Length: 114
Length: 111
Image (tube, rainbow over all chains, first blue to last red; front, side, top):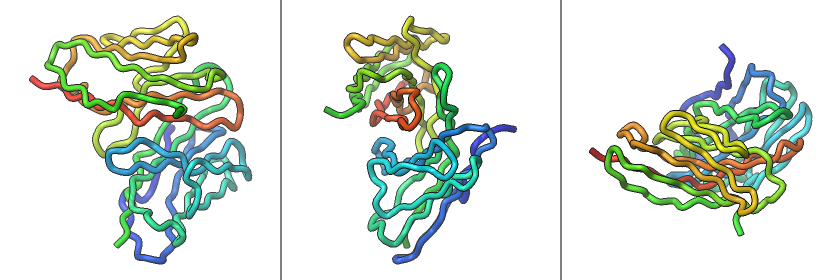
């Protein structure tokens, strides 16, 4: 089945620790995105990538890093520099070109600092 | 002006009611428009794309007004299962442009 998979579903991080969230898609989509959602809030863009080995900062990139070594994979690292990382993290992918290319989302990762 | 704005609600309506949501966008070059639905603690899922000519899918109707830069979603004969947050999404199809989400409008349908 084609789709986009995030792991883990739940993640607990200690203060000062880096953690990496996985996002994999087999939809052959060019673009991939990471969003953060806080309770009762909308989605805020962290990073996005339209092609392998290239990515751009979104609105809230500070304290996060990404890589795009393969078309299928776009992992997000939450570094110790991110002071308030507890949130719901969503990864999405979409094709580029054509009409109305919608985005597909993974099921999300809930990150909690303990 | 924010790129994509929605009335956050909540909209509280009885079953069978008709409810409409509006969304305004600031980038006149925007080309693609979508409505997503997000249930509590779940990922957003595509409800429908919005085309220039307007489109309908069962009880749901989406319309685009480019001159005024807004899109709308009409839900007829509301069901309890329609209770969710509805997200307006705008993008251009030019490479390098990200999806821009509104903050969402919350709908609660009661019996």
